[in-house]
Image (cartoon, rainbow, N blue to C red):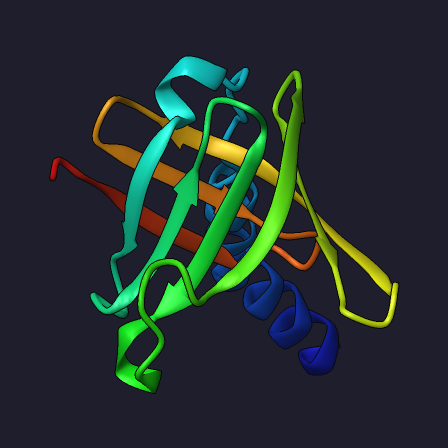
Length: 127
């Protein structure tokens, strides 16, 4: 009887944590292509950049690895509702793509999450 009472008390003690974790789900937003166009700087690595061009192409580079704009990895991008797809093509013809769910998009902030729930935040570079 004591074991059941203890188990019930433990369940009640942890119930609020379960409810809070369920409410943290972020609702995605519909991607606005015109807000995406431009150069973005990764918030956690201020030397990593992503550029989205109006012709649905782009480039990413990391200056901490001594890679400058124009020397980076090229990609194509597309959007559908809340999804951003990045298509990368290697020199040997290999094709790799990544799908992200956009959870925040403003003129100056872009936040996406991958299929594992990992979030990335980017800040728009004005110059």
